[in-house]
Image 1 (cartoon, rainbow, N blue to C red):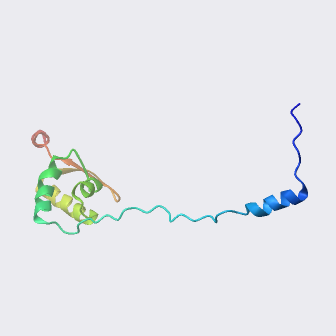
Image 2 (image 1 turned 180 degrees about the vertical axis):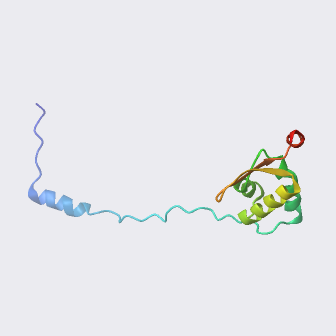
Image 3 (image 1 turned 90 degrees about the horizontal axis):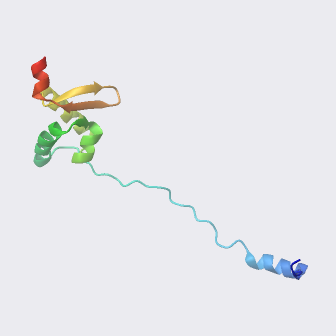
Length: 113
């Protein structure tokens, strides 16, 4: 058996409890905050040229992919993709209420029709 440990008296226990206290009060976190993105709402000349050259070369073209790549507004990306489709530079794969998916237009596909 281990040696007997001396018990503290009631006064000693009371003094230890009073001295400890609660410590520091808990601070609430500010919560997670996202970085504010500053996407452009209008094309600059360089951005429009970049849009016209880079987007038709992408395999999978979605609004979110264009927004990430060119740092433009989603509404501007949707409008630009519609214009590229009308010009025949890209082809529509899926158009639903929430998501538009396009792909590059390849000349071989048009010859088969």
